[in-house]
Image 1 (cartoon, rainbow, N blue to C red):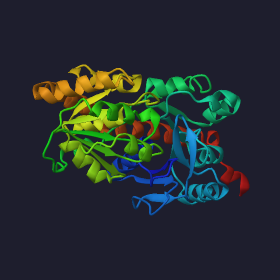
Image 2 (cartoon, one colour; image 1 turned 45 degrees about the vertical axis):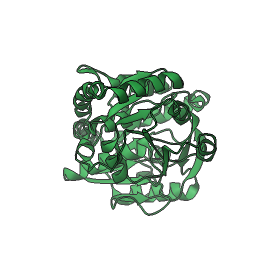
Image 3 (cartoon, rainbow, N blue to C red; image 1 turned 30 degrees about the horizontal axis):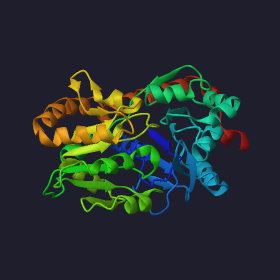
Image 4 (cartoon, rainbow, N blue to C red; image 1 turned 180 degrees about the horizontal axis):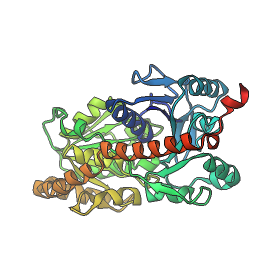
Amino acid sequence: MRIGLVCPYSLSIPGGVQGQVLALARSLRRRGHEALVLAPCDGPPPEVFVVPLGSSIPTAANGSVAPIAPDIPAQLRTMRALWDENFDVVHLHEPLAPGPTVTAALLKTAPLVGTFHAAGEQPAYQKLSGLATWFGNRLDARVAVSEDARLMVADVMPKDVRILFNGIEGERFRNAEPWPTVAPTIFFLGRHEPRKGLEVLLRAVSELPENTQIWVGGTGPQTADLQHRYPDKRVSWLGRISDQERERRMRAATIFCAPSLGGESFGIILLEAMAAQTTVVASAISGYSQVATSPHGLAAELVEPGNSAALAATLNKLLADPKLGVSLQTAATLRAKEFDLELLCDKYLEIYEELIAAALEAPSKVTSLRVKVR
């Protein structure tokens, strides 16, 4: 099966959608399918199966900055790749994000699957509701990664949106060699912007034991300001780190802390920490709560968003009593296995096969500008 996965965000910049697209492509290729990822890249492609579409343009979106490529050259490269590769099915991630996914929906060279990842407020969907609905109707199958993500497009999207939670490559975290550390360590990883809540953690640091080490991964618009206002020698500012370093630090950390204030449709990074058998402390926001609440018991400690005193108290409780962390890790390990990427890949393959079979039975339903221009 030839599968094209289209990502609107630059693969040179770490992000949940980018990681999910690359991981799904790796799983598909391990199973013998010819999966290619079409996406912007601001440097060398991160994998041999990536077709680079050009550089990205940082754009404000959902309280963050999205590295998208809405420029004409990127769209022409997208069109050329879709025509040349002759995919059996094309899978669009964030189908309504400006750039390659919208172009691929317009072109529609094969049956289309669309996965919606984002949650939170999206005024553009309401302002362009008619156009968004039209694009939604171009999709042959619609998927949301969480109930929050589904609700964000519910007013403009056809009603048959199924929920398939994101998956993790659990083995990579379980088998990672722990990064060297000599003290109890708290790990934060994310973009340094208000909605990720890094400042909440930094405010809590003064209440933590003197021997506590804090790893801060990532960069962002707040980095310099936060470094200036919170000059604590216990905080190590790591900058952007590789996937391998991320896995090793996840495995080594005493606690992984995710103090986000909102805008998270699903806690994929929490699941990665759980797979690494690291205790998780996170904000009690919807996207994180659905991950932490498990049939096996509580898989993470949840605290009030933005409350640095409550965060400090929870971190101190877990640092003082390692047995509490072990209890959380037991449920967390089982929880992470429920979201193994191979299970998600199975479900997407079922969708692909259904759409390809339907297209063979009624090929006229798959419209293509390629056919029209020839």
